[in-house]
Image (cartoon, rainbow, N blue to C red; front, top):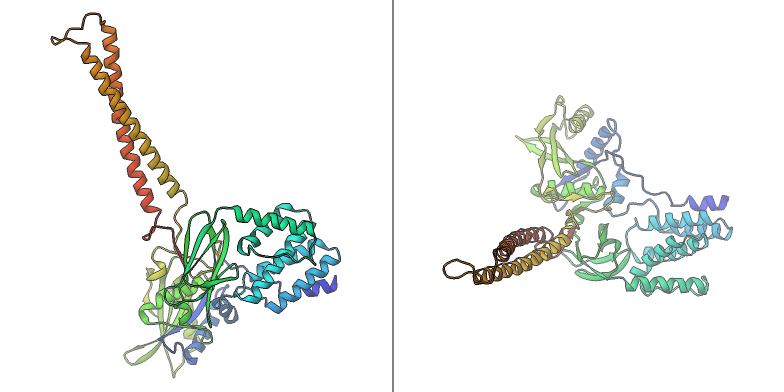
Length: 480
């Protein structure tokens, strides 16, 4: 057990769960240089002042790894050793420990930046996990693991030496099940440049690129050395989806300057909120320098990432090129609480929606939708089926209205044929027959009006639902 514990200790600690309130502090300055060493140091000092007052303040190493798209503290060499530990546990007949270790390995690999080695380790861990689950007689877990691997790697070959024929046959059956499921087209684009796109860690080509996949949850990422966008998870449910990877923020990052951003003043609010999404933070503080009447001021602005809003902004004066610790503390207190502080000039204290991601979009950090810069809210899945159903009902009611209209016309014709020119009944026709014919014609006429009104109402409903469920290009789209 000691050698197993040592192996498992190497890299299987997942990234800590985000607190309810997580705060990031980021330096920001004009491009192309971005924050200098002096501003980076002031941002660090303000971060310390915030840490003295609240919990959940992200440290610099954690911020850097998240901004670079790495949400796990593990490394590939550590996960390689952990895999060896899982193998040792399996050989020692500690099957449950082997299974839990392999699940942790898969989870950590899915939090690391995509690459050939990471993908190779992921496929190896997935097939080994399926085998261990089979030994534990968990058929549902076996099928899910196999089909997930086969969906992204349909040509995966099970090693004939490591795995028995019965297991290889079971994987072939899972491959056939995955291949027989209806496919959904996933298109990955990037607006400014062509980048390498990844799905579940597998390189699928350069953007724009489309792949057809069975329904399921897939991890999508992109890289353009040395730039990288944090991965996101996309749920495919039978409707084509488009993922747009925006490398604008990646280009603005200055990892070793605070970390910081190089952004124009008019773009800073949008960049800060998006950076907060990449950090998985609930709030983020932008730290910059401004000049006022010849004096240098340190400015801090607090953003609510999920709301996409600037909450408040304050400034303090520099003394001999630096900010006294008391003034830094006062600025931190003002930003965190909104309460007036001596020496702090409040520039804004009323929440203001910022440009870009805040305009009607939701942010994804480490929440159920997965880490990502931003994602437009998905259209409710019931809308399009409801539009189709409303259209079908409208067609049906239109048919009923037409049928009843014809019946009414024929009924009135039959009733008129029972009358002479003077209005008396034709000989041989009794009053009861005439009344029944006229009543049936009236009922058909009434039904025709009701059917026509219902058809019109459902036609309008179908049009509204159809409009709301489609984007400008005529298909659902998710942008990150």
